[in-house]
Image (cartoon, rainbow, N blue to C red; front, side, top):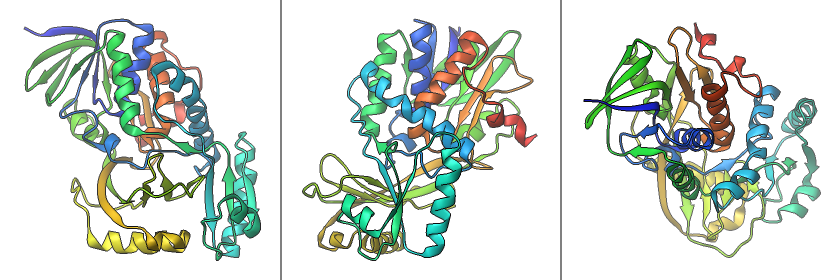
Length: 357
């Protein structure tokens, strides 16, 4: 016997849990989230957790990210403390060529309402004195910040459960069958039937898609992060590649490695990341490194989100993207709108999976 739900969401990370929460605001029951492990054991629990906008290009992607960032203040009030801080974001540069690129970035982003200031050396050092005096300048935007990813996913889950959402942990999906007007989802612990199915399985989205005969063009990209001992507060802003957390730890790194599903860390990374950190903030030479970790981003083929309905299979939806922390409030809102209303409040056609056809 299968258990029946109106909507099943495969994947309970920041995107899947965000969808579950937003959908539960409109529908109070009949929602199931299935995760092969525990929702914070994957990408959502191994991230720098920036809410980052101002360097996202082209400008239409920056605009999309901005819409999501603007939802964070409201989300914070709705689901509880997620340690969201709009610190402002700084992206330093060290050459005149980069200065020209920064000016072009500011001009293009201004067309979609993203305000960027191009700072000279004195201006950026006045804002963030810990930066190297070799910096020539930086782009700055007030819109960027960061969040605690553990609190974010936990609060999504807590609020979703209060609204009637059911979670199935440590329950791998092994098969999906499309039937007349429904889906039959087979898992290691049982069968589930649903009208609507959402694929938000992160780096496993390609494997889940194959169960429905789909070739979803995503693959894992490894990122490694290094963490210092807690330090007295000395950094005010979120930097491109480095930030100080509220507990004093400094998180360093933004690697992009083609390593398949290998989540191990590497000595080469630690060395290169330490050099990157010292070039940016020389005083970190005095800090002790206490640990490093790695995570896997789900990376679409063209690196932009895949979001929306999957044509040809009624009531099937996908939400696969890197920058999941930044985009989760908007992705959750839009998929919820599609399921409940059949349309979205902003256009999402350019994010359709049909672009890979």
